[in-house]
Length: 74
Image (cartoon, rainbow, N blue to C red):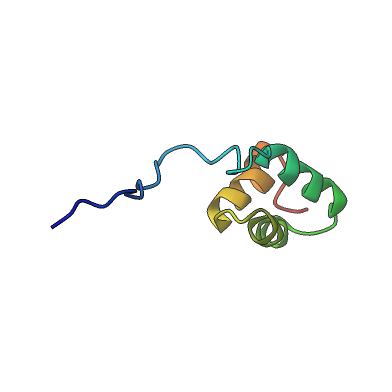
C-alpha cells in the first residue's frame, strides 16, 4: 500500500490558537467582537466568537472570560 502523500497532523494541545490559517490575529479579532457586544454575557460572547472566528467554544470562552478579564456578572 502507498503512504498517504499529505497526512493531516493532529492538532497540538495545550495553548489556545492565536492565528488563523490566513494569518489573522484571533485575539485581536475576538477583542473587537467583545468590545462591539459588551452587553452580552461571557457565554453568549463565546458562542459568537466561536462561530465567527471558527474556533472551539472552549477557546472562545477562555478569551471572553479570562484574557479580557470580564466578570461573570457581565
